[in-house]
Amino acid sequence: TTFFPNSHAGVLVSKFLTGFATDEGLIAPRTGIVSMYMHQLHADDIGLQLARSYDIPVFGSIRAAMTLGGDDLQVDAVLIIGEHGDYPLTTLGQEMLPRRWFFEQVCGVIGEFGRPIPVFTDKHLSYRWSDARWMYDTAAELGVPLYAGSSLPVCWRQPDHEHLLESRLEEGLSIGFHMLERYGFHALEALQCQAERRQGGETGVAAVTCLSGDDVWRAADAGRWSVDLANAALAAIESGPGALDREAVDDPHVFLLEYVDGTRGTVLMLGDNGYVRKFAYAGRTGDVINACE
Image 1 (cartoon, rainbow, N blue to C red):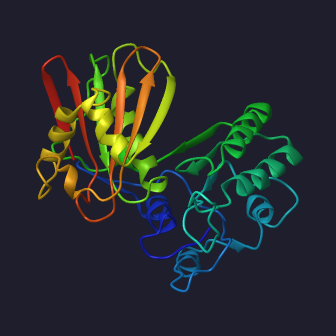
Image 2: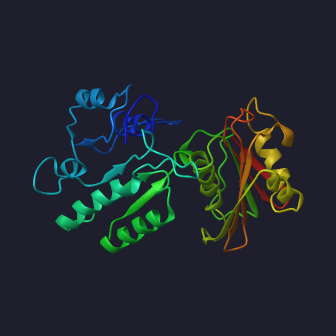
Image 3: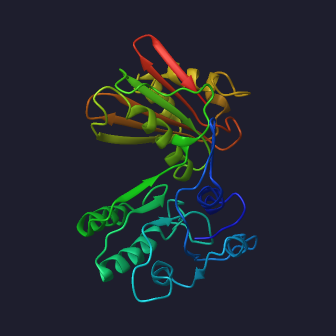
């Protein structure tokens, strides 16, 4: 959508150009960016400068970027970064980022030339369920491998905790903050990348419930989510609050996930007043709780 310092484009595209930093050193790029399209030019745009530095052509349409201005599909994959920009809000306060429109354009080119290629869309598919469903169904119809996700599963962790594959996991909880949809998705991914490593693998989600305000604390008092896990996750945050203080949270929300296999998942969103400024996770197996920021 747009490309400025520390934007999602700035974070993601740089990995493909310069590599990915890990504990073991820099992983060199294994793909080449051959074209770019930007929907909006930000006042602090760096996309054009970066493209020029790496000799990447920038095109005025998605079709042209995928065909390199020619008459045939010339790329092997597409990365859609639909985050940031000057877009209106829905009545729920969601930014109407054109992820579906981008994907629709991409699929139009794929359908035109009859060659399905993988597509990765940064974060969630769309702000609207019907659009997300359309994207999924269209990808299946065209045979397009469709990927989506957050950066949280590959972020630094302290301590460096990850459940072993096939671990017993009874309940997991992640802590999030800031905007409910944008950062709530990050917190969901922080939970899911741990939960899917449990014994038997991912079985699916039967239901998700979102509660706000005092209903968050009522659900805790009723045992619908674990305060002990929340405290363990908060205690793992360096310079964090240490333990949950309900009075200090300005606008709480909680996502309650019911997995098909009975595992419980919780995402606790603790507002935007600075009470927490980091994501954290805690998981329980019996009396053992592991946590990290």
